[in-house]
Length: 256
Image (tube, rainbow, N blue to C red; front, side, top):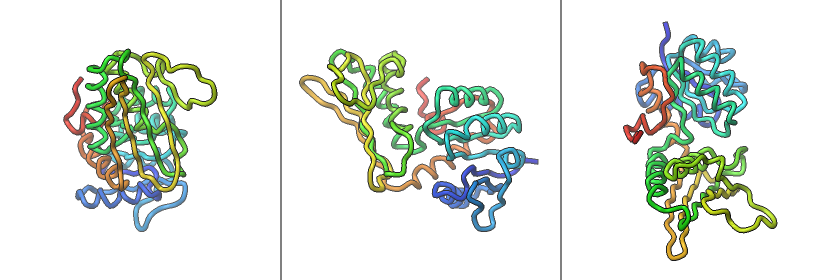
């Protein structure tokens, strides 16, 4: 019989925080997987299939390259999934959506309550500010070790703006401008990514008009906010029907 919560990437920085946050919540740890070994006396499984067979919910902050295998194995085992891995391709996100037809999945670019408030505000602001008058730009900065850009949270903000405007983000996204790019396209959603030091995460959404600028900024100072949010999502998703959920659902902020 399945019991407790599993952690994919249990020996990493986030994995260790998740162990602490699960303990603080009084939630049992089933164990985890990690290519770098285990942590203290936590049970270490050989692979995701072994972990999925034992855990009710698996919390996953690993790598985008693992998403497809994890989606298939967790769906096969009927194990709920809390996915915080960023940088997934369109094809990998499709695998996540496919798994959500069989299991409950909470997939979020960021598990911070503050960031999810920003996402909700971004959508409402985008709906209220005409794209012909207000240019949308998203600026983010992270630590030097981050491997994907723009960040998953920046993309999430961009998707919120696109929803508010009733457009597809991929059709209007402008990222990594360099050289003679020409004038800014009307209705574009721009991205700028900075890397350096040990910045946990900073994101600013800017709506720039000819006569005013509106900026919405979130700064994270400790990764623990992501770990505690993910544990909150794991406790919430346990026992839910199959489906693709977001942190908005967990926080009761889903606007539909």
